[in-house]
Length: 437
Image (tube, rainbow, N blue to C red; front, side, top):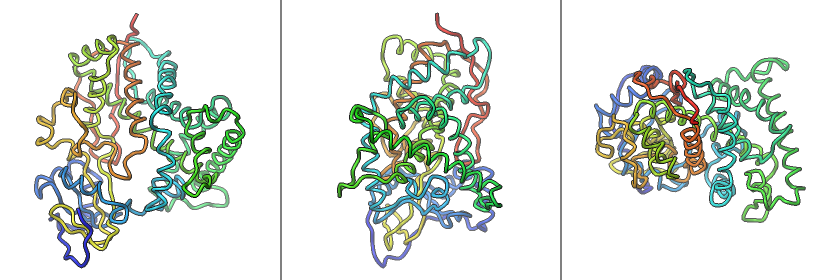
C-alpha cells in the first residue's frame, strides 16, 4: 500500500446498472448481491451506493491488510454526521485523524490488562442473575436474555455503579439508543415540533443522560478510592492528554455512550448465534461441556471465533481515501473513494477456510488471527472493546454450559437474514435447557 500523487485511477470492475437499481439490490439481498458480484468480478469490485456513492469492496486478505495498515492521513473513516447526532460529536465513531488518535489512546487502557480481567466476576454474576429464572424443558429465545446480560455487564463495567443511577441508565438507554439509531438512519424525522416528535423526545433522553453522567463524573472525581476502581468511567476521569489536560465532561459522556452502543447488542447477537449453532452440533456440545468441567477454554474460544466467522453480525467495515490517490494491491483509488473490507466474503473464502459452509470450530484451535477473519474490523479503527467482548462471550458461554444442559435439536438452522446491516437469528436463538443438578 502506498499513497501516490497524480496517478491515473484504476478501479475494479463492477455493475453498470443505475445507482437506484444497485441500492435496491443491496437493500433486498445484501449478502446475496455481494456474493453474486464476487462470483462475477472476483475478489474486488466497484458499486454505486445510494448513500456513500462509489464504493470499492475488497475480499482479498492481502489487500485488506494493506487497507488496515494505511495511516489516517491516507485512509480514515467516512464522514458520518448522522452518528454524531446519535452518539455525540465527540464519539470515537465520528472523530478522525489526530483527534481520533488522542481519544483512542485514553480509551484503550480500560480494556486491557488488570482492568479487563477484573470484570470477569461481574460477567458471571450477571449471567447467573439472568438465568436464575430460565424455564426448564420449554423452548424460548435466548436473545432477549443475552441482551439483558450484555447491557448490565457493560453498564457495570463502564460506570462501576449500582443502585439508583444504574437502574435509571438501565431504563433510559435501550429506548434512547433505539431512537438514536432510527434518527441517524432517517434524518428527516428529527424535526422538533414545539417539544413533540421523535427529535424532541431524543433531546429529552440526551438531557437526562448528560445529567446522570455529570453526577457520576463529579462523584468519581471526589472518590478517595478512585485509584482502586476498575471501571471505564474511573479511568477516563483520571486520564490525561499528552498536554496534561483532562477530558471534558461532554467528551466523557460521548465516549461512554459510544461504548454502551457498541459493546452491548453485537455481543448479545453473537451469543444468541452461538447457542443456535451449538445446539445443532451435539458432538461439539458434549466436548464443550467436558472442557468446561475440566476447567479449559481453548475449544470454547475457538467455537466463538467460528460463530463470528459464519454469522458475523456486521458484514463490512469502510474507510475513505484521504490522500490524493491510494495504491492498494492492483488498484489506484482517487481521493474520496469509499473502500470497504467485506467481512462476509472474507469469512467464506474457501482458500482460507476449507469447506466454508461447514461449522467447524476446530479450524480455529491453535490458529492465529489473520486478515481473513475480521469480525472486529482492523487497523486504527478496530473495535476498541474487542478483547472485552471476546472475554465476555467466553465467560457467559462457560457459565451457561456449567449450569445448564442445552438440549440438542435437529431443527433446521434459524434463518440468516440476507438484508440489513446487522444479522440476528430469525427466532432469537431458540433453546431448550435443563438445569444441571
